[in-house]
Length: 294
Length: 237
Image (cartoon, rainbow over all chains, first blue to last red; front, side, top):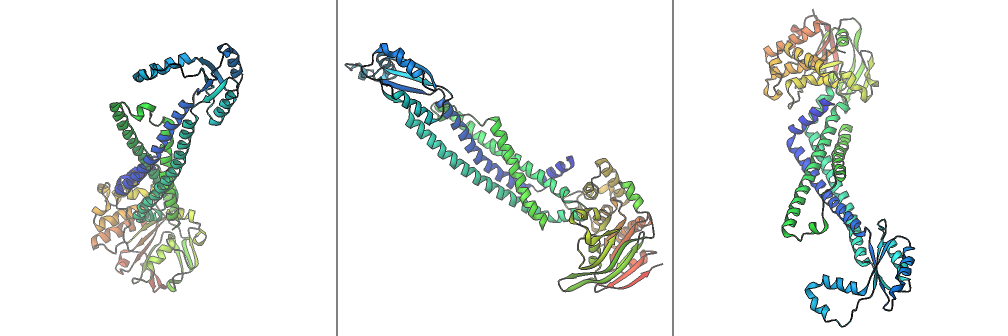
């Protein structure tokens, strides 16, 4: 195996131009695929954090008697997926609103009466992530006689999930497309490399080398090209990520800071590098199969 | 493994190559027609004939670079018509082939070119190194072991090709016009290596259109080909 490895490294060095083209092709393809992966990993995490312990606001009827709160709380706590129920009086809500709108305080000071209703802040179980379940729970709460309206930001969540779903499908399609393009180019570059070395292969056959002796260094070459290309692609993505992060720190308003964008996890990185190695190997396999048939 | 090869080149009188009514056609044209021939182990065979007589084709049929169109070839008990693709490398390891155009890999050093034969047959690196340096020394190319073939002269390249043919200690050497493009001194050196290896008991098959070679090969058998047909076979003394 050491012999084959040395042979593969030596062949990469002696066929530098073709190998550089292959490595660059793989690197660019991996860059595209890993950019999508970075987006999905972060979007998934953001969605997770948004849906973690999601809160449903239940606005109560104007004639709600506060003495009825313990009974209402009991009724809601008996429902599925409910973690906690907190009563927020209309006075507390107004005070909170004034605090949040401190810059437009005069607008609220001129109010003759408190327009806000008493409300319940209902915390759902953290395991509840599916929008349908959240919707069903909210609908059950809304059925209660004292509850006039229920809100949980369903439209925003729905839109976010739809956009994410769209990006995911686009991402899969683009990643598959780029994988195929990279495979096609890798296979053809290997074919060119084989073509330029057909005399060498022929001599090896004439002196008694069998197919596995001839092809093993090529497979190792493909594997190494894949790992190198994948590492370079990920390296470029990391640099771009660092540049984005540092410019975000300067502006203080960056999307990165807002959503805490993180680089790909080690697991994801390993999967991308392995896929890249597989890509290099597969490109070789396809070309060699055809080449040896001839 | 090498030891067994050394034993395998001890002289014996049994035919090591048998050809029975062998023909080879390229399209409608016969390159070889109806060749029947027996070669005993340890013989030195000189195949002569003009260009296009079929000498190279005869060689190629032996190491299965070409397949016969009809007839049978048996090498060391193996019927070449029945050899499957996977077994061909094992047959070729029994031959040491010297090509007219040397067929050296230009981007590998002299050492690597010669070592290739042993590496392909799975020899251990230490044994490879020892054997390669020994054969390079015997052909006078040890000082050039790290040099790439394009830098060498024609004579030097052919000496590397001879070293590559001998390094596996094959029982049969096939040399196709081994001196064709060389000056008289280089040609003499190549023939000396072949004669020296022949004296150890190997069977040598040399194809050449150069009739002067006959005088170098004492106790050889000369086979003449003309337009693909065997016209004469004579023992030289």
